[in-house]
Length: 102
Length: 145
Length: 161
Image 1 (cartoon, rainbow over the protein chains, first blue to last red):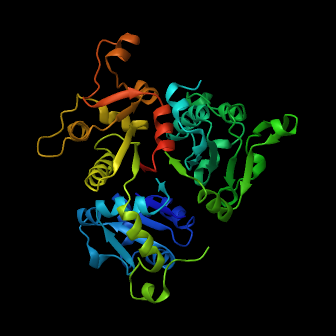
Image 2 (cartoon, chains in turn cyan, green, blue; image 1 turned 180 degrees about the vertical axis):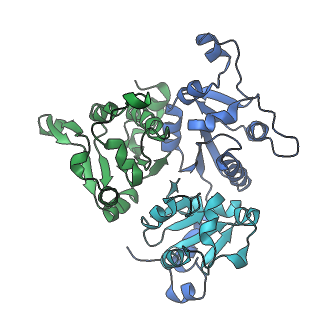
Image 3 (cartoon, rainbow over the protein chains, first blue to last red; image 1 turned 180 degrees about the horizontal axis):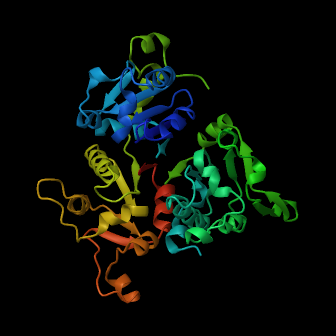
């Protein structure tokens, strides 16, 4: 049993990102979408926090949202996987429930 | 109260539905409109619970007075949840602490325990972040607004 | 609870592995019933766009979309009166066309719709309004439809602010 946590807002805008990371269980997955992808950027103030979460959970970012904001694979911290919408669907089906941290 | 579709739902598949409340009331409509879904959900006889964390804990503050802002005070509705068989209101301790709030600042919300001669029992259960994480991980469906 | 991540793979930067990978491969073959909840209106928030792209991808993968429920400002996706700029996407049309192509059930919550002025012919008559604006492919119904989706669908995915 595991949970997919979606985060759609930037950690600089809203505390939902932190809240999500505070409610993870090992084996869960985190998917950053929309403005939330900003939280995956290397060397950002939140990079260490995210890297720590990636040790016990699968951390993913929606590639199309990253590209829309001028970023790509090379811009995110190590351990973060890029997925497309099809991958988003797979994450929803692979985990037992989805928690949207709005 | 129960509509035709509700009756069709397999009663063996009683699901655990949790409504996750993370926003303060009145600044946005999410607290109110989430509560409206909770009331409707009672007709479906599922295992319904509510979680209050982050600013959502403010939804349960006692003494809400909205006359100055000209909006309807809907906080009394939480007190009626027991009548709708919704008796598990989890409040996250860390969210209270971070905001300088104590459990005594919250409304007293009770339900009548039919297994204990209808004795009034508290619906609000203050739990730790880690306990709430575990409770959320046991749910079938998490509803967020 | 035990972590399903292998330490060596984590060090190498891979995140999907061991028993988590096996489980992932197995569940990829299973087709599920999905419930979609859209809590924001078109354009102001990306929620409706993301929900639309997700729904399209899910259909492409062969999953069943049990219902798309529009709540809060999401009801504003269901007005046929929008005239967005021609050089950008038309979200209302996109939803209406997706609904028609795949026989989707797009439901606009009646309570939220009344608050925000989204009416069908019946609602307009009932409340003495001189117009209605519901878009093709959308229907107005009660919150019970959302609860039902939560119960009947295998997964409920929420798109909001």
